[in-house]
Length: 312
Ligand code: TXA
Ligand code: MG
Image 1 (cartoon, rainbow, N blue to C red):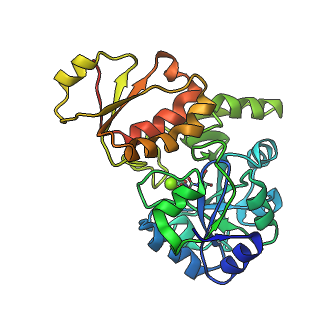
Image 2 (tube, rainbow, N blue to C red):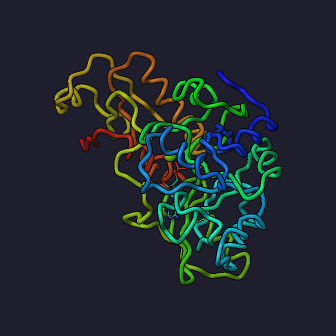
Image 3 (tube, rainbow, N blue to C red):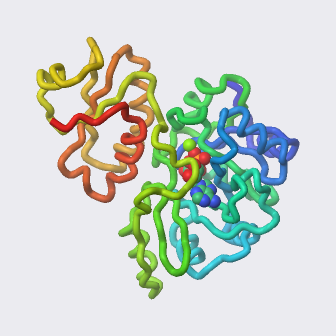
């Protein structure tokens, strides 16, 4: 594993290189926003299509605002209350943002990650770091340096920052005409965001985008190697055997822990473990209280990772 320190990370980024950076959500594959070569390397290394825009990471609201054409009161309130943290705000971009970052869109996703090492690195850099999750396109996101190494080997140097605390990617919100739309669910739910805004006297409609317009929100994503089937909690195992056409010998039945925070922290690690431990199929059990909002981020990822759902 090629582990580097903050100074080396900064040097590499400023000289057209890419570096894996730790964040509280997942590890990112970073390039300096002003290095076109670095940005292109992200796409080629990840085998990511150019139509999927990157999130820009900054260490302050001032730096975020400097990259936008329009920074509304809503942006300001959410950034002040939720940053550093797992929330990506979409804003109208200005000319400092390379179209490669936004896939040609006129808006950019901005986020201030809550990780001391990455914040320190960002504080020493001009602009920011563009970083998607540090995994091959469509594969499971990394929540540790080992995961990054398993995906890219020595090709990508890593700033080691320990395991990611939140464990699933940031909530992505679009802000337009006084309404807020959640394109990707995560730690910050609609209720949490709505409460934050209300505290500041802003009564704004916050909703989940039904069919997310966010590019890159493809149906299949985060896929483990073995089939993943969503089943009801405490499902009858005999019944599954009769219903399912996929042959299997060594299934794992996956119950989520009680707390959604712990569930999200462990989610991707578990998927990897199941892949590695020689199981040949995963049955992810959906609990009765999993329709609660705090579980949306987790089940959104599982829905994208699934082969199919069994409703028995
Ligand atoms: O937690 C995270 O957000 C992690 C860490 C590394 O910060 N990053 C991450 O990046 O998950 P990525 O590339 O895997 O997902 C970024 C997604 C895009 O696929 C897209 O759905 C959305 O963010 N996005 C980015 N810019 C956007 C824009 N201008 N408009 C709409 N959606 C955008
Ligand atoms: Mg990703």
